Amino acid sequence: MSGIIGSKLNIRGSGRIAKLGTDGQVLTSSGAGVAAAFEDAAGGLDWQTIETGSTMTAVAGNGYWIDTTSNACTITLPASASNGDQIMFVDYARNWGTNGIEIDSNGLNYQGDDDGYTVEYGTDGTALHIVYSGATNGWIPIEDDAVADVPVTGNEEGIFGFGHDGNPTDETNLVSNTGVVASDVTGVGTSRFALAGCEYGGDKGIMGFGYTTGVVSMSNLVSNAGVVASDVTGVGTARKALAACEYGEDKGIFGFGTDGTNYALTNLVSNAGVVATDQAATTGTARTGVAACEYGGDKGIFGFGDTGSDTAVTNLVSNTGVVATDQAATTGTARNLLAACSYGYDKGIFGFGSAYRSMTNLVSNTGVVSTDVTGVGTGRYAAAACEYGMDKGIFGFGDANPWTGVTNLVSNVGVVASDVTAVGTARGYVAGCSFN
Image (cartoon, helix red, strand yellow):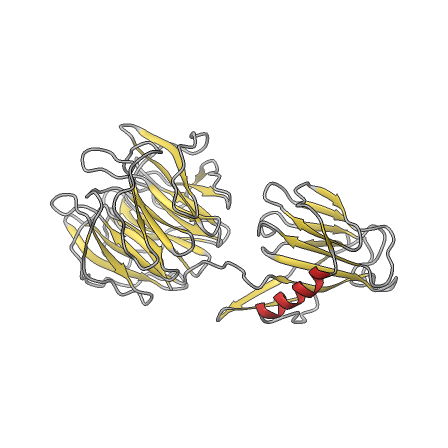
């Protein structure tokens, strides 16, 4: 192969998306323009059923939904074409960033280059509309961008809160959009530890439950500026060592935990931050020391924990807050008191855990948990994690014998970085969530 064409660069800011082509030209700078072009193009094409294979041959005049959830796809264009022939390809499952497409121009030129070049597209949500212009330039993309309603769900900043440093604390530490942890801020809520946190309302957070001199049922809302509010009396069963995550893009769920008896019950959080009464446990093994995170943009997953012995089972959460039955543990070391957060907009990561482990397990955008990845940070348990920078994550604090305040950044491809020296008070059993 003599080169690569077709790869693109996303530039995000202020809710707008600009995309640069190979030669640097801006194809579009607004989602609205993409939507209009897409509608015009779609009306004149014959749309086919969803393509899921690793190879396919395209026919002029057709539109194709390309689902690369399970594999990448190589698309062969027609061997002959006439001026004005059109074809459109759309990222059906928003997964081209993980499994992209490769275009085989089948002897014809593509953007003026012969088919000795590799033509690849690897941006989630792409709608690619190509038209044949004649022998000289061949197939030319006239629209090559993400659709208007891209479900970007990341938050810019995060917060670690509460914990235990020998005594229950109410301290919080903000995380900037570049992953820098700020010094302690004295809290306004009841000092406690072994609580959980998650996002709600699209840009705010909530921390709830935990242990003071006994288990409690209370929550503290976190504004979209990172300000922690005073206690709100809880309505769910008082418990500790539970987990929480976002679902449905703007709601949350607390789940599992213990008060001496392990539970599998959950409490939903509305998009206004209101915690609901217990949902009776009908699915999932009762356990404590669980972790949870988002995946797939609008779903969640609870994983690992202690049932009397460590386990690696997981329970998926639908985009309506329904918790599924146990997924048998086929990958990942059984452990409890680990942490989890999302990264890369639609994927998640579990990390660290009991027995002072330093290991992680990635979660795909379909909720599949991967095998262990050897860690690079200080082995510890009772840490916390949250999202930052919209598509990255951070693990922080925990019990490393003694307490620690070190943090480890997670890149937007799920790579965990080495320790960053502590800024906040060393402590464990902390909660984390993000806000915007």
